[in-house]
Image (cartoon, rainbow over all chains, first blue to last red; front, side, top):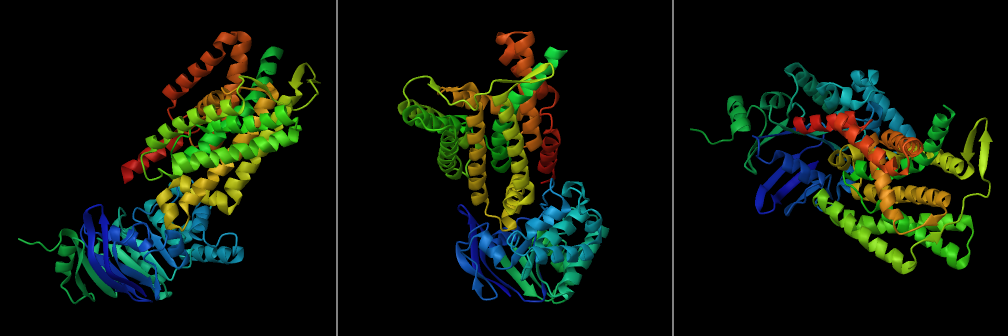
Length: 239
Length: 299
C-alpha cells in the first residue's frame, strides 16, 4: 500500500503540490486524474524521489520513502513508467529490459532471464523485436517496453505516468487491457491519466487533482462521468 | 603506391593514439553532454609524475607507466569533483569554462614539479624498424597500435557486457530515465571519469614513449588531437572516435609526406571543416544528432 500523506512539493517559491494526501491500495488500480499543470507529474517525481517533498510523508508498505534517494526507492520496490515512455533508443529491447532489473543485474542472472521470458509472454511484439534497437519501435511497442522495463524490477507497486499519451485510440485500448491484465496478475498499479474515460473503466478508486490539491476521492460511478471528464481536462472552474 | 601504403600504415599507428584520446572525450561527452577541456592537461600532469620518477629516481619503464596511469586517474578525479560534480545541476558551459581554468592550474603545477621545458621520457623498446616486405614498421608504433586495439576491445567489453557498462550507456542515452531505473547517475559519472582517465593515462604513456620527450604543451596537444578526432568521427560515438582517430592520423602523415610539415595541421583542420559542413554530426554521429533533434521535437 502506497500512502501519500500531506505532501507539499515546490519549485522554488511556487508550490506545485499543496498538501496532497492519497492512498493506493495493494492489489488495486488507483487512478489520479487532473488537467495539465495540476501537479500530476510533480507528484510522480516526488514519490520516485527525483523531487524532494518539502513537507509530508510517503510510505510504501509501512516503510518511509520520503527522504530516500531514487536508487533506494527503486530497490524498495517502486517502479515507474515515465511520461513519454523514455525508453533508451540506442539500446536493444533486451538491454532496455535489463536496465529495468538494474538493481539485480549481476546478482540474480537466472531470475532476470526468467523475468525477461515472462515479459516476452506478456508482450509478444517485444519478443519478435528483442534484438532491435528500442528507437525503431512504434509508439505502442515503446509503451509496452517501458511497462516491461519497469516490471523487470519486480516492483511492489507500479507507477504509470500518462501511458496513453500520444498513442492512437486502438493502441490506448490495448495498453489499458495490459494494465487490467497486470492487475489481475496481482500487480498494484497507481496510474496518472488525462484520458479520464479509459482510466475510469479500469480504476477501482480514483482521485481528482486540481491546482495542486486533491478535490475528489471516490469510486468510479460516484461522480458523473461527464463531470469527471470535464474536471480532468479543464479543472472545476465552470461558467 | 608503396609510399602511399607506407603512409597509411604510419598514419594508422599514430592514429591509434589519437583514437584513444578521442575515446576519452567521447565517453565523457556521452555520459555528461559536457566537454572536459582539461583532459589533455590531466594526462600531461600524470605523465610528469612518471617523468619525475624516471629523471630523478631512474625508475624502470613499467614503473613509469603505472605511475603515469595512476597520476592521470588522480588528477582526473580532482577535475571531476571540481568541474563536473560540483556544478552538475548547473549549465554545461560552466563545466567547460571551469575545465579551462583547471587546465591553466594543471600546467602551473607541472612547471612547479619540473621547471625545465623539456624532459626525456623512457622509450618503449630498443628495437628500431621492423621490415615487412617493402614496408617498414616502427616497433614502438606497433606496440602502441596493439595496446590500443586491446584497450578498445576491453572498453567495448566493459560497456556492452557488464553492469557498469549498462549503467554508463543508460545514463548516456537518458539520465532521467536512468534515475527512474534506480541507477546512481552521479556515481556512474564519477566512475566513467576514472575509467576515461585510465585510458588517457595509457594513451599518454604510449604517445610520449614513442616521442621520448615530454613538455607542458603536451596537454594542449592532447586536447587538440582528441577533440578533433572525436568531432571527425561524431561526438559521443565510440566507433566514431576510432574512425576519427585513424583518419586524423592518416591525413596527417599523407599531408606531411606530399605537402610538407607546414601543411600537416592545416590539412587536418581543413578536413574537420569539410566534415562539419557536410555532416555536422561527424562521420558516425549524424544519426545520433538527428535522433536527439527528433527527441527534442517530441517532448
